[in-house]
Every structure is written in structure tokens, then in C-alpha cells.
Length: 310
Image (cartoon, rainbow, N blue to C red; front, side, top):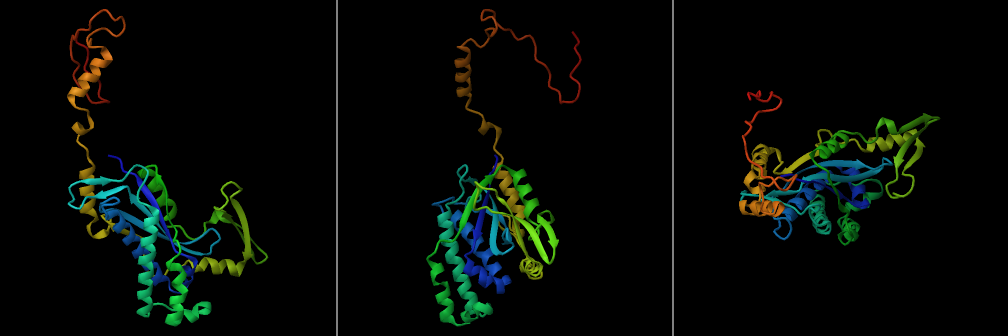
């Protein structure tokens, strides 16, 4: 049985990105936990998929302009294990989970964890955000976000495992900007190419020129804390039981050949309908009857077929 791979992206509002700028490890960990819990809870709900899923998540923290834009890319197989681990539960073709439901739960889980981090003294505030050290100011800052729509969207499913692997190759270990996007470094300014995804019907490729100091500042924004894991695995892909769970998934996805074939009676009726009940009649002249004169023994290609002894 073939399994689709879905691509789900979790993005935080700009106000959260500003907090994350000074609290990268804490906020990025919250992003991972909230997104993972959201997918596992909604997928496990019988009203939706009703299965235990597995997936991996990749942290991206930059946009095309090299500004701070934390978001999480999740690659999810389109199905999961039933609660009794006796069968594979597949999602509907081309559809994984409702994004509005994902968005609502993700917002709640993220803000709850952020509130807890504030109470535990795990958040630091500097510059324009320094007033948020006061609890009442922090609560007021987050108040509009509790009612706003958070961006969670599902991209079209991958065409298959090969496309998913190609995606991994492009995004898992890349840095904020690749060399081919750098156009020039002259007179203390750096020019680079960026893509405007908001205008799909126009020329997407554009050029931005900034002072060299500003370019370096934007690039260094995306340096991760030492030892931070930006690729993580969850559900049946989690490291602690990945081998056993994957083996079970593969076993449940193997469909017996008999299940792929229609019942014998259906085959006979179909054959009778095609041949009008005259299965032995010659399909070329419609008059003569075909008679079996022998059965060729099987052989494995590329071995030579048995020699003709007639």
C-alpha cells in the first residue's frame, strides 16, 4: 500500500517572533512541543483520523529577506497506527487534517507554554520589549494574539517518498542564504536575490541591496544556540521506539495478494461478459475454438528460456 506524505507548516505571529529573538532556545523548544502535540492530539482524535501518527519537524527561522521568521516544517505520512496497533489507518486521499482545527489548538498550547515560561523566569526582555518584564504588560502584549488566527497551512502532498527525500536534501542542512543568491559585494553594500511569494502572477525574483553591516546582522540572527537540534522526530518516528514501530507499520501496510484480487466469482462473471461465454472461441476469426496443447515451464529473467526440444 502506498502512503502519501503531507507537508504541514506552523508559523508564529510577529509578536512572538520578537520574543523569540531574545529567547531563542526557550521559544524554539516551545514551538516544537506545541506543534508536535497539536498534530498528535488532532490525529489521534476519532473525529478526525483516530490514529497514532509519526513525523519529523524541521525548524526554519528565516525568510527570503533574511529577517527573523520562525516557523516549523513537518513532514507527515498520511496515516498512522490504530489504538490497538492491529491495523494501519489511512487518511483520505489528498487530505490530512483540518488546518483551522490545528491552528486553534496550536495557538492555545503555544501560549500556555509561553505563559508558563514567563512564570518560571525563563524569558528575558531587552530593548523595545523591556517593559514586558512586568507581568501585566506581558499579559496585555499577548492578549490580541489569543483571539487572532495563527497561520498553520498544509502544502500539497508530496508526490511520493522520492519527492520527500528531495525535500530533505534541500532544506535539512541549509543556511540562511545560499551562495547562488549572493550577487555582489561592492562599496560596503551587499546585493542578493530574493523571491516574492506574495505575488505569484508577477516576476518573483527580485534584488535587495543593504549595507554590509546590516547583511551580517541579518545573517547572524539565524545562528542557533549551541547544540540545538533543529530536526526532531515524533510519534512512531521518535528515536526511542522508531525501529519497532516502523517494522509494525511496514507489516500492517503489506496487503495480501488475495485482498488485491476480486473474488473468483467476480472474475468468472467478468470473463464471461468479455467473451460472451465463449472463452475458448478464437478471438481472431470468431469461428474456430482454441485448444490447449501445452504449458510453458516458468523461468526467471534474464536466464535463457528452456530450449525447444520439438
